[in-house]
Length: 477
Length: 118
Image 1 (cartoon, rainbow over the protein chains, first blue to last red):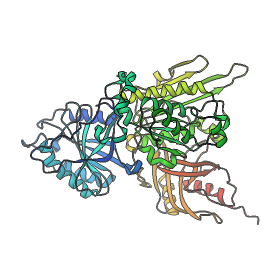
Image 2 (cartoon, rainbow over the protein chains, first blue to last red; image 1 turned 120 degrees about the vertical axis):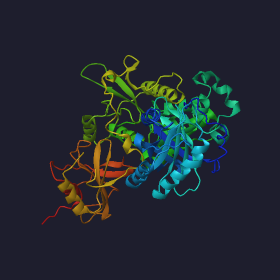
Image 3 (cartoon, chains in turn yellow, blue; image 1 turned 135 degrees about the vertical axis):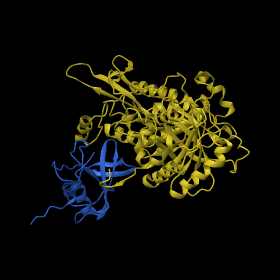
Image 4 (spheres, helix red, strand yellow; image 1 turned 45 degrees about the vertical axis):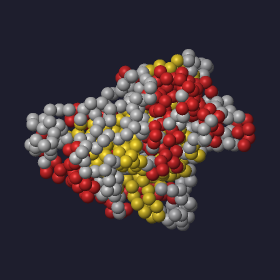
């Protein structure tokens, strides 16, 4: 179920007659599963068992809070159950014995993580729990909750492209279903609530014609663009282009972060700002809000004055983040945060170099840092040498040369990657995105290092470190 | 990254409830409620030790907030740096390597120690 084509059913599936639980309501929960983990689960659960008709596994899940107290659940690790820990029972597709259950309970105690019972029904789109699932699995989950009452547990049912989850939040007697469940990869598969519960984020009918010319993006693309939460960190030369294009595209949940105000030196490239803003020192977040209001006619989007670090919970809830930052260290820190919360991060930047008597060289880059895949360190963009050199200048970007059109090219390219990521309109999959921009020749090409990058998992941000950090007593690492 | 157990034990002995975590390929030690050199305000706070080369330094000591002090470390070149889901602050300060973990901490705390004129 693609973010694009992937509206949850407008009504939740009917519970089986044998169900003893009320139909779960939709909770304020975002459940993110890295594509890599989803693939491992899918492969494991699809293997035939010597006698059981289905397979079962456990998914360890980290948790945290996002914007307005939203619950974030992040899949960390899938654990397969060995064949010999299944027991024969004709009444169920699969049943596991006490050893597997004891392991699960011990894992909750040891790790402090939540645990989900996982199995698969195959098929496509949001799967439905069977009567047996609904009758039996909650009892197992109840024992998870007893052992680990401070974290969320639940049951997860996979189809071939998405999943359905019933989640018991800490202290809750009844389960909820996630407002949004995302398979984080390229493209970004995600379920989003039906129109009726999306409120202001559902594009109004009268806007239908307004987006007719971009209908090739897919039948649900406008719904998706209206619902997806796009974070933009840095609303200057690059970010202001992205704000503008986000407004035109119909992105309704932009989250901007910038602690700067407009200065005269910004006016050569800051879209939406004028001379009066420089005189009045208008915060860049205000310029962004004004621009969006002008384009969409809607009330102001949520913009956050100050660095993103002061609004970290808001950032965590973003589905995609685009960074338009000046320093390598700032990029490193933002990428680390996005990795921790399983958020695809698109980084853009430009610079001007002068070598000897040669004409200035205008160049830039765009990198998509996908959780679980290669990061900006792996790509050779962030290096200890660059970070050290920058730190020697105390991280100050100073008065680096900047000009409007490269910012526009890079921002437009980033918006293109973002739209493809969430709509999947090009149907490209598992795409590694690292572009080089040559401003002297006006070209955007794949970075020459890409064919030589390692195929291994990123060693800098293992998926086992997602969610709130788990500090261990020293000596146990 | 693994550190010598006796060095870690020494850190625990000196600073109590030391915990460690990793992020972005770096190992960090969280030392809670560390007493800062005399004259610092606040007098105690949490510190985060990165005993690995980072930002051009052989090691770094991050504080949970900026402190007022009379020591030589006045260049706060890391402000609200997000590490392990907390914002941290650090002054530009070099400590010669290699040292034991506890010595690294002490070396960084010298940035906030008023020089005696005796």
